[in-house]
Image (cartoon, rainbow, N blue to C red; front, top):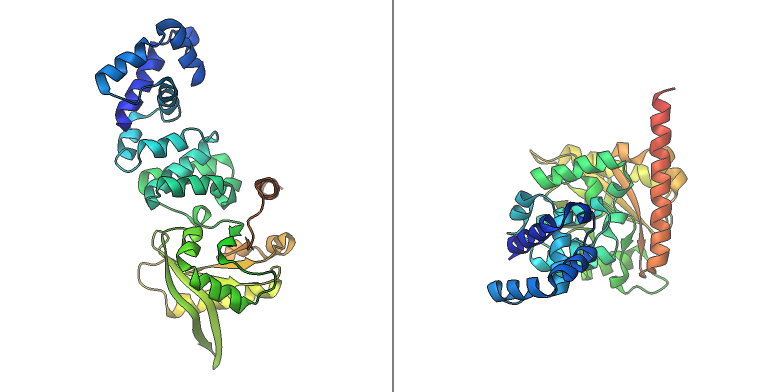
Length: 324
């Protein structure tokens, strides 16, 4: 059915005279309605059955426009339904659309999960959305062609932990217990490929014990992920603590074929100045905020736009510095 709908959408587009072909979606349907009235819809319904009302013809044309390669559609049609595609085709940003398509296919999202991810602005919360367009395109091409996922696709900022039901005042222990109680939903927020490994994992250095809050293993990344929970803002000392965890795991717990472990410090507030100066990503460390109450979409959009602007400014400064 998916391929049929694509073929029909593509055929309609080709039948439009050259000077009108720049029009798309509803405009193309309007052109058709003037030329063919309801005849096309009636003919398709008679030949193929239901599903060819004017609105759905609009969807088919849009489908062929934003997914122009039939071979890619053929590959996706075995994993994504027409309802999946109907949600994907109206994402205006091509990079976001390709991200959601690839992740939906790879993580086998239901239509409901896809809709939740789009509403929750998942793409905009990833580090991938803050990269230069050409770099983002290369990573998305690797995701599409080779099923290669990068940390920039997996980790996001901020994380939504509103489902934990925490009150205004809580401790790190309360946060950890709530995450374990709602582990399935927490993993869904992290990414469906994450597997839970351990809680309060004890490591010993120079006869002194340390405890890792949470340890996960995302299969696609093939590496351990340490999650350290903080109630306040990120502090410089948090980097040293996480580096100790990562170096210990790399030396004593890393298995053959795995990549080096990476860390995620979840804080109630970020400290952009500290994060920039400490160059955390070079140490395999990410910092992200978490919200225990879901923010309004307007507030979230403001925060994400600000984060994207800061990230791109830093990248521009880095490129300029290379030429000095």
